[in-house]
Figure 1 (cartoon, rainbow, N blue to C red):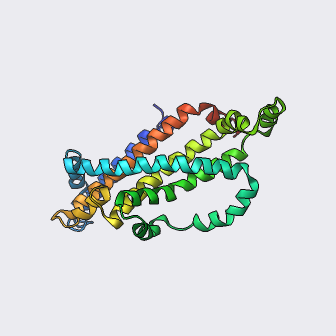
Figure 2 (figure 1 turned 30 degrees about the vertical axis):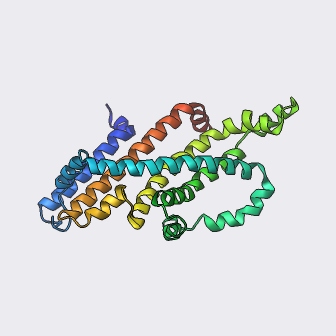
Figure 3 (figure 1 turned 180 degrees about the vertical axis):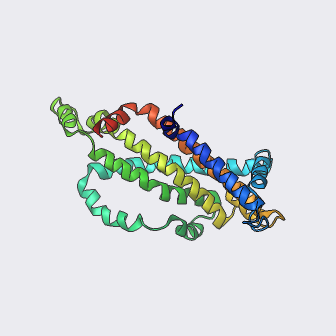
Length: 263
């Protein structure tokens, strides 16, 4: 394998980068550059993370977080996609609501967690509400952007054959917009996971990765548990993003080929 092909192999490059960071942190601890009391050795954290993978209580917390993540992401798609189509196909409505959208979009979603706590007594409902608010933006915007990319000639051709607005939407607009929606959902999945754990960290609850991290703070080896749990949260995020990317590439190869051809 040539040097160029090695650089093009993203999984291999990623693995080399992770291994390099692990060795660097381990070396810094072993040589005393970083005090192991202040920050544990990389090998210690890796061992703790491996132990958590076999810990039933931690796995139950992971399942709880993933349950809120999946429910929030599903509700996000059910809300944001129709809203994106409505705004993308009705310019007057989009113009009327754009100031409201531009006002709401920059608001940090984490800052809304205290408000969500006042509105929702149930912690699960609160997490879902925050997830939907934060994750809806990439799906909504990508749906609207995808509608603008639809070939107007294709729509006019269907209209000339007597097809109505719903038929044009179903036969032309939706298939053309689907790759953009898929990209929005992939981005929303990462945001949903971040908000699920953030809500657990700030609002607590009966279970969840964030709740585990809070409770681990009172243990003798608090830092080891916290960093190990955080690493698993990152691993879950990487795995989910990889799966969504693979599905997106498999379903929409034609769109990727068209995009690369345009370049």
